[in-house]
Image (cartoon, rainbow, N blue to C red):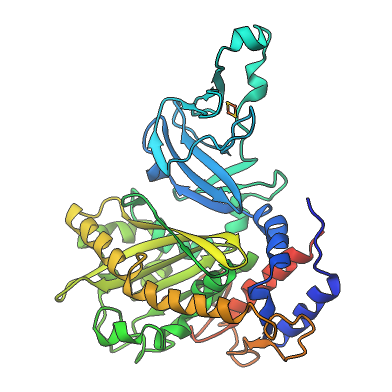
Length: 443
Ligand code: FES
Ligand SMILES: [Fe+2]
């Protein structure tokens, strides 16, 4: 690994400012910080790869990334899910370039070495003539991702073979994630293939937006409220909770205030309701019953939003959108975005859920466009002399003070972690940045 050029005293200065609710703006665009993040964060944490419903049959595969590493995820003959570095063991060519597909074997386009979904090398062009019968093919199998695990159908990989378990890593987040992904008997399924697009911003800008910046909905997304296609989070501002969880995870639960009419169970189809009652505990069920928006981030770069949207007329449809902010460079990300719904929802509802996603959080969706514009503006203004000064001589720090030392966690909250009585708060964002800094400081 390359030695980082970011000095300890620089990281200590970030620490000092962050403890006081301020963040140096230069961290939102810095090539050296970016290198350090790849080395210290993306090669050490559990990163989301795929949902198991994308890999239905033997031979199904999808191609994804962990940080900058191209990853191939496959379903084997015995039904196992495996993940490998998507790179041929002969000369290192990227083996598979399709987003997804199904194939008994994958053949490298350079010299034709062929691998099966178990990653085994099963064919070498003119093998016996070139390498002789003594070639040990087992030595040249695809290189597996050191750690691979699943939670409620969500497949994660980790490049660090000494990492603690996925279960431990998700920790307190599981209780809240279950409200979305473990509420029905069959779990979730991905509708179609995930969409991918590139945005000129930094992965932390988008992660913090989903982690705990529901504040922006009051301004950035006000037009969608005025058009009647989003819930009225303007007049109901702050009603609900913000959760600050271990390992830097965070989320907001936007709830319907008492006395206000809101769709029960986010307007999800009634045939699912008995399953919610069966699969969730009474506290989780109550949150789902009054839920409007569930939005959050699993550190570092897996975010989600579940939100009821109008697709025209009075009909309200809810979907779960999960997305990975793939770090391409300090000012570039690729968004990989999945739309999911409960497997047992009726086909008509699934179609509507897909439509509701496309018009709101798809690459050309109303809310997505609101956000994209702002994310690129943040990056543009964070790239030049004043914002990038590491000595902070232009006082180039940003405000992360909302609720600091003023809003305290709720005692005896039914779920784990620290829960705060409003989502107009910077607490979970500070928790995200503290985890980020802690990982950068680790040897
Ligand atoms: S690089 Fe793949 S067969 Fe040569
Ligand atoms: Fe937004």
